[in-house]
Image 1 (cartoon, rainbow, N blue to C red):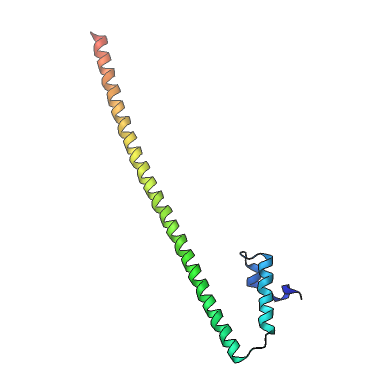
Image 2: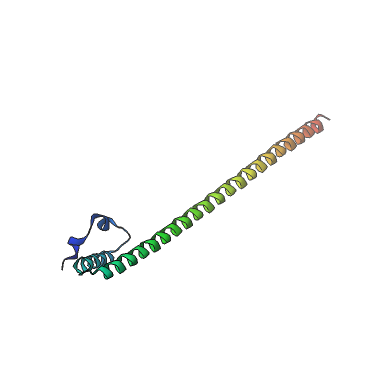
Length: 116
């Protein structure tokens, strides 16, 4: 059986599944389409499918939450690094200004010594 004719456009565009995974999904779809459903087996299947969908939704939500948390941590770290760098720059400017004042004072002392 050619499994590729069962591939939906969304399954074809899915970048998370390999060709082997896509083949498995298509074979499962084919098996479900060929299955002779009774009322009880259909209900069990629908219940199992709904539970699986809920489980997958919870997994996706937890992954999104983890990603958002990680992005938040990175943003906080970036802000902390920026604040630290700004403080360091301010300290260096202050040191530079003090050095300029000392240099000026030393130049004045040198001029006074040379004048004597």
